[in-house]
Image (cartoon, rainbow, N blue to C red; front, top):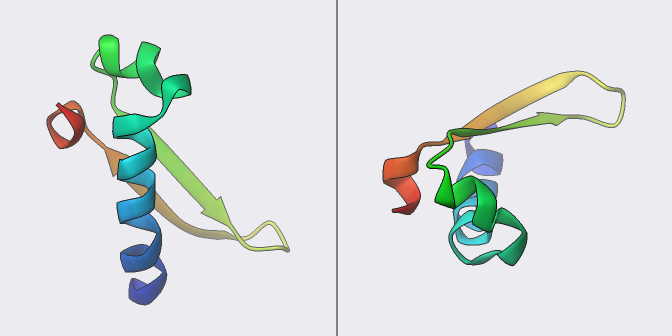
Length: 55
């Protein structure tokens, strides 16, 4: 599980920081929460990105 988070988290942050489609969220200083589930729909983890993470 921790390996998955270490793999996904920097990619999510990069997407939030540079993604055109995330501009509105960044402009409004929103906290973004990404929920991940496995192929059976079972909760795996959530990753939270706070405004201070991308400002």
